[in-house]
Length: 237
Ligand SMILES: Nc1ncnc2c1ncn2[C@@H]1O[C@H](COP(=O)(O)OP(=O)(O)OP(=O)(O)O)[C@@H](O)[C@H]1O
Ligand SMILES: [Mg+2]
Image 1 (tube, protein in one colour):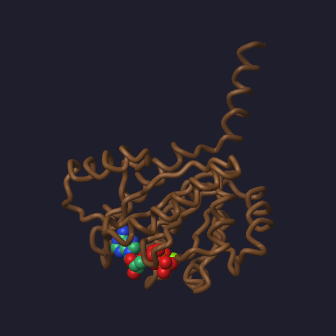
Image 2 (cartoon, helix red, strand yellow):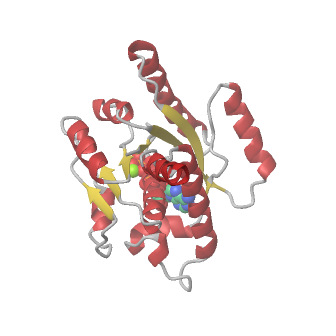
């Protein structure tokens, strides 16, 4: 099943936040989702200890360059989506994680350092394609975007990256208190209180739009042909 990876070598680019927002959305749609916490600081795992138990959502900690491949393969067999939250910095763990991915999403905040960290990830993917013929689909996702930024401004960034043949998702993750407070609250967006978190409804619809765009890019291939083939058989009978 699809392995969605969030990577940028720059620390603090918004990888973990985006990984958890997307994981929460996919799980809330009934998909089985496993998040691999490959960050040595284990933020996700610490956050997880405060979440209510869930049948569709799990977090696996202590991922290293030595165990990432077996862990990803094992989880991919038992889940609809595997989400990989990679640490910042260049490391063998990053390279292995990228190589195992179905699609790599590169969160970029629009600042030069973030873009440079994103470019390092794109470079590794390019090298993988050139030296080993392994082509991993990838897209930049803008994050911490100011809510009053105009569509036109986003379009300008998109076309700039498109000129360098980099795909950019149409949906950015907006700068919202809800996305920041998820960690402190030890909760998914769906479990947060709209009375205490400002613009929670907007954060939720932003998260839903991002997850839907990601699902369109990386569909659950196995589930679809099965349903389609049943339909064909019925018609033929
Ligand atoms: N869309 C957003 N709205 C508001 N705050 C955000 C958003 N995305 C990220 N942040 C905040 O930015 C900071 C860095 O985000 P995050 O921890 O997700 O980055 P990271 O790339 O995983 O960092 P690291 O490299 O340390 O693992 C955090 O304080 C987080 O709450
Ligand atoms: Mg992180």
